[in-house]
Length: 344
Image 1 (cartoon, one colour):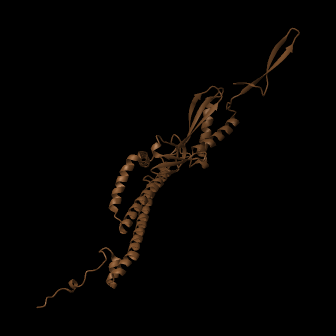
Image 2 (cartoon, one colour; image 1 turned 90 degrees about the vertical axis):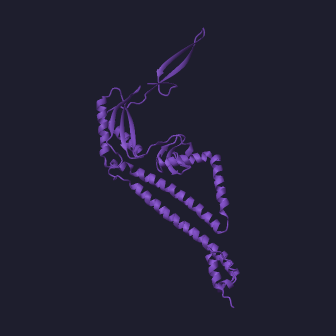
Image 3 (cartoon, one colour; image 1 turned 90 degrees about the horizontal axis):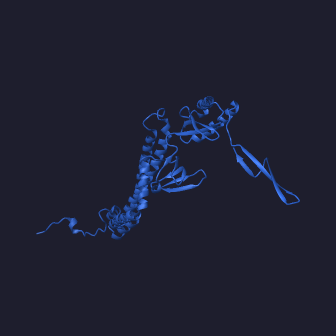
């Protein structure tokens, strides 16, 4: 009696390809050659898988960057209309760009690490020890690099609390200037002399931001004690109001300037203060323009701006010889260019 068996059970099971090696299985199904199937997997399958992972990572990075840009654009627009919240419009833009740059850097780093790990796994490398070693190394670094961890933690709170961003003028204690770059580890500043400062975020104990939302120009004007202070303040209000109505400063001066009155009684002058609320980073421009207008108007009105006066005394020592001995006689008279100086 004949025994029937499926034909598949009678064929040798010598397929060298794994279940997840599509190129090898496809080649073996066509040729039934073990060597050719193995080499096709090495020469075509592995490179194709690596290239696919790289392309997939690049696409995923592009999509996430576009999403971050879109979120940053919405954050830059804000909730309130510009007419109501116009003083914070530029600030929102700076913060959105800073946060977008940091988020893109983090996303790129994570994608690169994941893609490299997947490529190593595709090439047959056992990634379990690598992952375990990375965990141990990270734990060791957390203890050995406490300053680095402190920099990253401080940088995170700088972003979350919006202490400053790219383009702000800040005072960080040891260094002050315009912020050119902010990362989770350090802040890069350029001061007024063009010097670039790299400040670790963990070393920042305090932050003075001179350009957040709005700024203020404070001008102290000294006048003589003989001037009518009521008239002086009235002239200053007219000068400040003229600056407020000037079309060139319409978008720079936020509120009408304020003359606060007598600020100080100095030894040689009475100080009157003028304050102007300006757009961010415009306080120095407004202060220079206002000082120039005050000088020209005071000259026209005849209001005295006192300055230090100097009287110089020159002493001549003459020797007169007499028959009994030498006698010295000195005389003093005011001259210019002497060696003794008296200020008053």
